[in-house]
Image 1: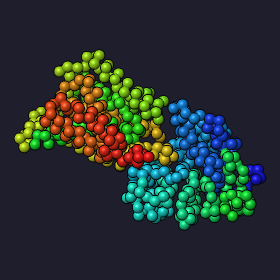
Image 2: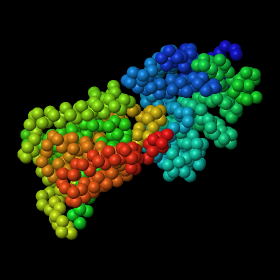
Image 3: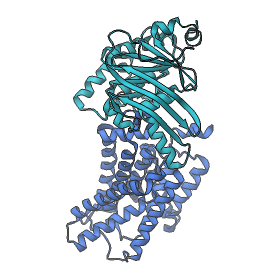
Image 4: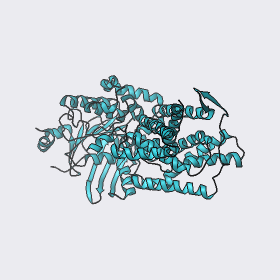
Length: 264
Length: 288
């Protein structure tokens, strides 16, 4: 595949640079999870990161959300795997590579993790309330209201224990939790994984609605087809390295991307 | 009849012993084995405020609860921080701290008949031919108040909701901006404060001794293990099982059997259903 050239191609109307990672390297001991990866997200965009299992998508999300900083701290305490971070990660021009996750949430970076981990003992409404931990009360009601408008099924199930929801409902709730935390940059790690095609299309539309709220979205996926209609640009990651970057049309036109990530 | 009433009071006392221990464990996974030591330490702290500084009991009690909470909080940042995530090490360090507190108290001469806290209301009343002093009613009321208050607290306040989040899924909690070390240390402070509250209402029933610290720890462990470590309902059920079991054993076998009941319950439950009689999720994991 052709070399990554990611700075020049944006669709019209995209704003200033919100997030920029340059030469990101993440090691677990000596294993390289991210290898010299550079990525850029502009305000108002929906950007996809495509890659197969173990390509480094989740590591990238953890690096941007700061969860990796917490993992690193915990591993250090128990003398486990040594995690090393290198490179540069800027959010609105500020270097954030070593910031704690809570500091990044305060700045507007919120992650919805893969496999939709929710608070299974709490009911749906309580899940959303918990997510308002850092937010003011009045704003909280509005944000929960928005989540219910986006996913009406959650409103119907708001008294149901989250652990009893179906996989798709849990995924909606996981996205809802992240939305209540009031993101400017929303990270979604494989939100379509394991869902029915119908639900995948619904969620893709929801991602577009989320952008309508002025939220920038960075989303990872293994299979790009349901996502393709809503994204502006995409990166393809293999073995922790960037192998392709381009607009939606460029992704669609590239024969290798079509074969590997669109199943065509 | 007296079996019923004294069993009830004994059960509530056990629940009071346990509530702080299981709160801390439920939120942060830390089994605070210094729980009993903090319980009796706050009793002696209140005694000291009253008898050395001349403060009234209610003020001494509040100060003792605050001190216990601060000790719990400091425990986390000084002793536990670098061991987080290693359950055995957490257990050993809290147990060592507990033993240190208890032995220090004994060494400083904190034992004997003169060490006791005053009851809030003197006197008693007879119900169905069973004499009960007012302090035991206060214990009952306090038990109910704490359980209801805690439930409201964790479901309806910001910190309480963060507690619930951390207890259920730490990484999701992290990804919405809840800090695990902050919540962990608060959970320890809350647990320690609850131990002190229990001490303030239960200790006036008898004489204070540092060995009570070990007893309280064993009771708390027994209730938590029997009831299952993560459910409030389990904790209450565990308190009642052991509480009534103890009173029945004392009545029909002999008073010295009271301490055997919780120990036997621990052994029995660990052998038959290690997740506790009312534990919820570990059941599946055990089967796998």
